[in-house]
Image 1 (cartoon, rainbow, N blue to C red):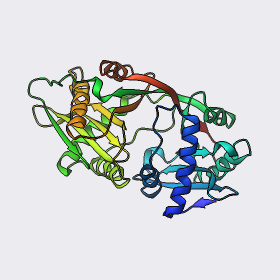
Image 2: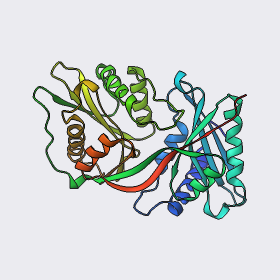
Image 3: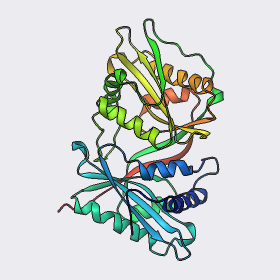
Image 4: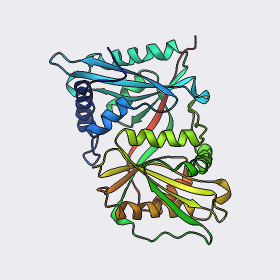
Length: 323
């Protein structure tokens, strides 16, 4: 059964019940489950240059036994690939073919649009990895979730002479969007393993739309940038609370423009972010982030900030027949 683009409150509640039940069953107790606001935002507010197909399998007693969605990219870089987001079957309904029904329903639009590969985020060692590997997915980019306690890092940030911080809450001001996009594109040299999924090309409009979507989904976006002596953007970091009462925020991105690397800017903006979170009086106690195993520079910065590894995951990919 395909869920429409504007699900009702009851449909959102039923979807949220599935992902919450699966989270509590599959994830470590320290990992907070998604909030209802986060689930609603994901279902109601699409990402820029993308369309979605959402699949539900009704449960006999009402609600859903399983859910799943696929993001079909519309940007030129990724028209041949797709991304699977929520893919969850309630524990009491597993091993009844429901996951296979969801996968088959998602594959139909993927094939219809001629997509030749699909990527999904998979927790290592869990039921999801077993299911994915049985359907031909392989680990294309091994990663680890790291967690930092906000209160553990109180070192004051420092910048090289002539540099200064710029920070905001919410959507990037229009005058700073081009500079932020320029720095974001510096992440193109980050490890991408064997993924067909390619990094997006960022411009001012895409930056504004991405942060706007996070806000429209009910989240809070915090950004700290470092400006160079000439006023250009040299580095930035971005943290998102997916709902206002989040105790664990998510680190979305940290990037330093190539011309400004080796000056401690990545560490500085991340330290300033911790101060900003405390100053804003937000409920955040932890920040979680994923780092690819091959990304040595970012792992080194995070180690200095006290990030600890929490669990292993990976971006798994399956290639599909063309035509």
